[in-house]
Length: 400
Figure (cartoon, one colour):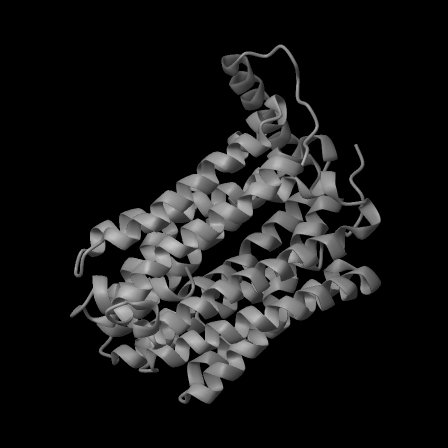
């Protein structure tokens, strides 16, 4: 999502297309997948809570993502519509699975250790993803070692490897993580109905519990900026003329810095409170989004990648643990459905904001490079709004 797909989308599946147009296409693809999850996430979470089906839903969405990702191997040059189609469903699988994965943290972590457990989970994700990505990068740099024809073949094979890696490392959750039983004696139809009624009740409850509502609103804005940077950073680097392989190295820097940094953020959250640590990360991201407009050299992009690695895992992990504290445990999947719904509505706004800003500046007669610079810096407003709203959210246990 962050590395090879944007590169391949521009250079292979959208070859010969103006960079502003290909950026808009990629932004819209992210927005469509985000919209789907935003619409269905709360209902899916409510049904999973009622029927004790968190792992079943996790299995379905994970393997949807796996199959669609591996399908990218077969997409030919210039066939950007098929690439977008598979990408959208792969992203739905990834984001949909995270709803139920996130909700299981409540059942595997002691309450007083949840910041550390959440951060450690993200840190291992960065380490695992970084190891595979490093192997794939080596494949693109030296394809002959792996018996591959060229770098393009190596990238296509990497989509197969990602699917296999994703599949294998999903197995421990399915085999060893237990979830509490839901309501017994409910048929599938009754489970869906009960989930729907629970969803309506929870929506009313969120409106009444001001603290949950305010945090979700703040999260909506600032995580939008985070996810947009994750998905669009490489596309931005290409648009301003940076070298493809140097951009891949920048992604590797973020991955491996993210491993220890996420753990450190968990410790900070444990000592100062998750809210304070989230504020630090938001401020850093605000500075990054403004600074991105001015970068000209790959060394500056490397510096940005290093700084992003310091805060990316932390803001994700501590947002999850903060939310865990302020919701009722018995309806975890449903509330995380709302949590992911809000995040995905943000992913709708962010990439669309980048795409539309770029097109607007292009229409005003600006060069493609200036249009791209303006578009990436437009997300600064999301961090400002998110930080202001977070001031009003309280880090306190849920009370009925």
